Length: 325
Image 1 (cartoon, helix red, strand yellow):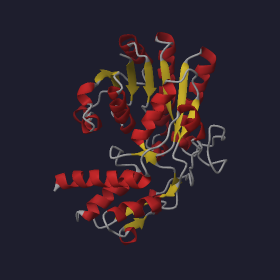
Image 2 (image 1 turned 45 degrees about the horizontal axis):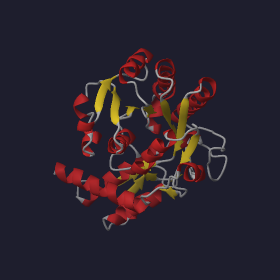
Image 3 (image 1 turned 90 degrees about the horizontal axis):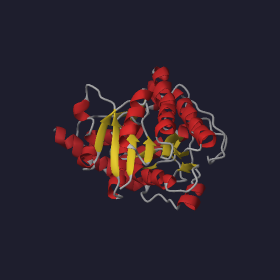
Image 4 (image 1 turned 60 degrees about the vertical axis):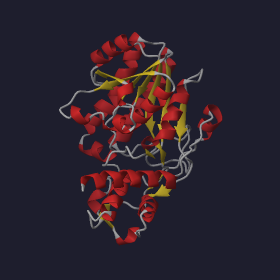
């Protein structure tokens, strides 16, 4: 039985990755930062019915000493670093926290792996936000980076540290440059989930409008369940590398909202308003990934369409909101 250590296990990707690895027969251990809200930390794992099949261990990616102790105890074969301050909008309000957790936190995990368990395989959750002001119409592993947020800059530091540990110390370290990936487990603060939750509230008569920011921003949206499979595939390769994980299609926020409202037979134009204060200080207008390398080397393909994913998200939010009535 192989052992996987996951940081950020209680997030969207951590939960889906846990589900996938448990089904693969792994022992799954999750790093858990204790907080006053510990009663709700397992919500996503519980939603996927996997909470009872994983082990949770105290630790913090900003504390190298705790990471060393955890890795000494767990002795993982694979380490997936998914922990981050991951909400882009918040990174402008908390840039130092974002840099410390999202950037330096990854370096701490790499260093702990190098010191204690150098034979372990390491995965870093890189982000399409590193491309920012895009330099190519389709972004691949060769596209220059130009982050447009503190979050993107912090992810870029973590990404290049992963490359550095691979090249300097021989760590089997790979980065997945993941484009936007959503699911019913996405945080409510993200625009995708804000839309599907808003649709559910409006459909059930709990709200009269949905306020959004830039409707013209375009993203390459996929399903988180597909994307965590790509993470695992990277660590099964003999040679570590970096991979863009995307669908190869882009859609605007307007398109996403239109599809979500259409799912419940509503016209989004009747319910959506725009507010300037919901727009980013520096917008990323277009992200469109080129997943050719992942398809060729990993044999990875997305399996869930945008329409299917949005329908799943709206249905889940309808269930949640009905439970509140």
